[in-house]
Amino acid sequence: MTSKVKGSIRTSKLVNEIQPSGIRKFFDLASSMDNIISLGVGEPDFVTPWATREACISSLERGYTAYTANAGLLELRVEICEYMKKQFQLSYDPKNEIIVTVGASEALDIALRAIVDPGDEVIVVEPTFVSYAPLVTLAGGKSVSVGTTVETNFKLTPDQLQKAITPRTKAIMLSFPNNPTGATMTKEELEAIAQIVEEHNLIVLSDEIYAELSYDSKHASIANIEGMRERTIIISGFSKAFAMTGWRLGFVTGPSDIISAMLKIHQYTLMCAPTMAQYAAVEALQTGMEDVNKMVQSYKQRRNYFVKSFEEIGLPCHVPGGAFYAFPSIKDTGLTSEQFAEQLLISERVAVVPGHVFGSGGEGHIRCSYATSLDNLKEAVTRIGRFLEKL
Ligand code: PLP
Image (cartoon, rainbow, N blue to C red):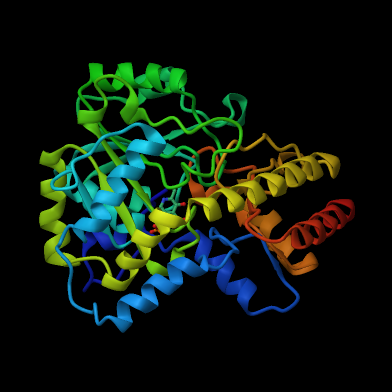
């Protein structure tokens, strides 16, 4: 995913090595046009539930405007640990096994910087969220891409993992439910992966930000497999399931030695996550699960409609078990994913993201977010169908 681009001689070699996100390019193009249906955005169309917003307002009214502890409000850390226990049967100590971060984005960054030495290899299972490979590069490591395919429903196979491991491999980045494919992995499938992880003494960065958005079976965390908790860093946050992207609030749980290393970076770079957002998150965890469940039901309904509709208009689409993205194949059109996305945008004003921006295995697909109303999805399907007929 990181090909060398020429940068300024004044900027660092590492920064010159990474490229701007391919998602942004399409956003920028789409925002200059009107009558657009955007399936490009990776965020909920729901507004943060009122009780959560009200808790933020109330924290401001009470004058809670100072820094919190570096690791986050203890009250929030306790709530998150209870949530992890209840939802995923994982126990963490609120004192030294969790940090409240500025989004899952920060958690990914400080996790990599805490564990990677120059030249260490980190396996990135692709297609995946666009930040992983660049963050490995910025941490001084080398990202090793493993491309999953539609033939295995975009799941990582033990064979693929085995082949990617070298003596320099330090860690593996997993993300299920996955952005952009919506793929999920069962406990049994993760067990086969965990066995190899253990054999090679690897660390797992498991980005589980879409865990709540699992539609067909309960989310399985790799940290729940015997021997894995002590070598797994779980990254999660409030952006997706709690509809809180703009609040910039995430969290990371893991073994205390790694968490305390991460805390050093967090304390020197961010100090703490925004205080008022943390008070809001306490409320979200205490009273917001019903709202989360309603949103999940709505995404599930949209997914079912969307996947069926893609098949009807001739775009094969595997059934995404989680997150809020469909990843249909456009291979039969003969266009590259970039050409497809660009021509669709210009001729029918539907914004999607070309699959190749998500790395190996992404080409030949487009990412379509269904975090938008059913009416929008229906109109988008009509337009995409018309586009296909014209090809
Ligand atoms: N991880 C994945 C897999 C994502 O898809 C995203 C956002 O799209 C993030 C992390 C970033 O989340 P946050 O808003 O918490 O920084």
